Image (cartoon, rainbow, N blue to C red; front, side, top):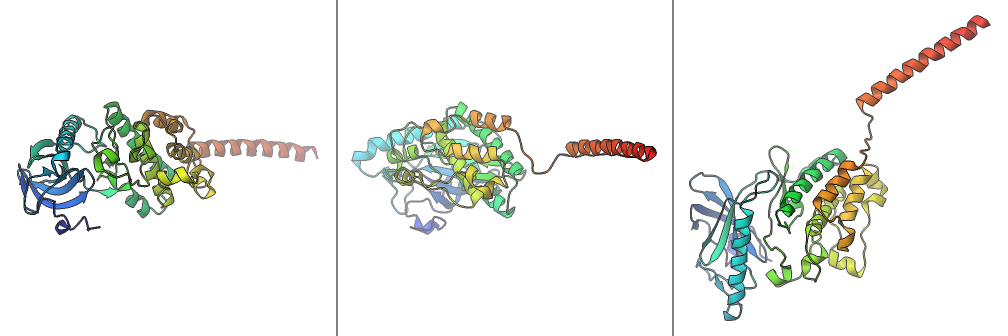
Length: 333
């Protein structure tokens, strides 16, 4: 597979220096079955931006040294134009959203026979990389990050969007240490098979992502979020959902003493629930998962200062009683 960081490996990617409205392409930084992602610069503000180009690889081509994107042949021309309309419709609707933990879309436009949308370049480190630097991240830190992301997903789902691409690299911790969801896929209810022409799954995708007939919904994103936190806690990727159909080798976190000794049981069991294969056994909404975490008793390995103070007062009180009792016995003798 060509190196996606090398622009020369994309015969169909826009070249550095290409101008799209007020944005100048710096380089291609990613590709998928539906889009090509570029790093660019806003010529007016001089800020770095991320530009997504509609490019369903199964439906279209761009000739070497040309800008225009065209359907691969007449048989897929209608499908390509439907895909483009859908892409622009979803991007335009998404651009109306505003949440501090979800990357916004600044602008959408059509050019070169295809569609584009522009987002800010979020500076920071992926969540899992920050967690690795902590060696063993605390349960409190993980719980805080998870709750913040669940609140963001609740907002996204309430506005009838699915993220469809949650994984360790698509959660960036910004300069304030808050997680921001990036790399959203504007697929809606379309499967990867319909959009990309392939069904290869990843460890962060629920079974319904890869083209079966189950309906996608909030539980699909929550599976991916659970898989992401599984990786942060264990340092390993969870087994691929399609492989689990044949033989489910998933090992629950809440049954592993290596993790129960370090993290709250309610955190581990909630991740296990998110990673259930059957949809009906997962969390049905981000709010449901969030409510469960907020109502669970938080077990701290260290007693609170208030509890320690109360214990100290009780110990002093009983010492006085013991001393008084001992003193009376000595007088009688």
